[in-house]
Length: 157
Image (cartoon, rainbow, N blue to C red; front, side, top):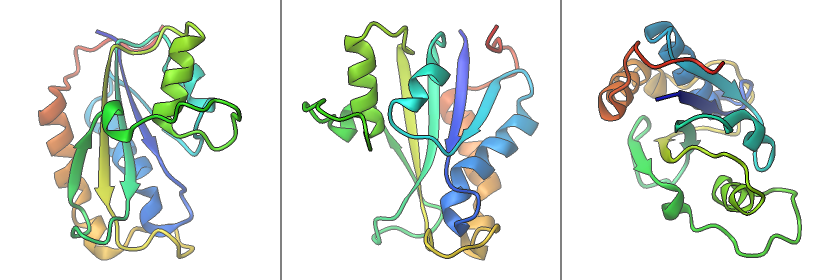
């Protein structure tokens, strides 16, 4: 099964970079799995994810209800895609996938989304807050276990 792990975020906005940081650590732990980091959103990700059977997305979320480092597992259905495709600007992931399906993109059959609760996603800085920094290795382990990721998955050809 061809698997892509895709970490989202902005590397200069403290905790917003957590998806990228987790993806970087997963790449070190699992060198035989394709792992990428991205600042892109919406339709731009369709080209990155085509041709894979499984997609694991990691991004930050700030609900204000959880503790920094708390991990939420979501599906595309949880994100409730918009039904209005009148603009391609600012499309969320679920809407981009729905549009990709309509356009015939060969999208992954299996998609998991991990949202990591953050404390500060607005301050300029290249390091995560200490609370979140302490959680990154634990989160990496949780995702590897939950997704049953191993080094036998083929990279994109």
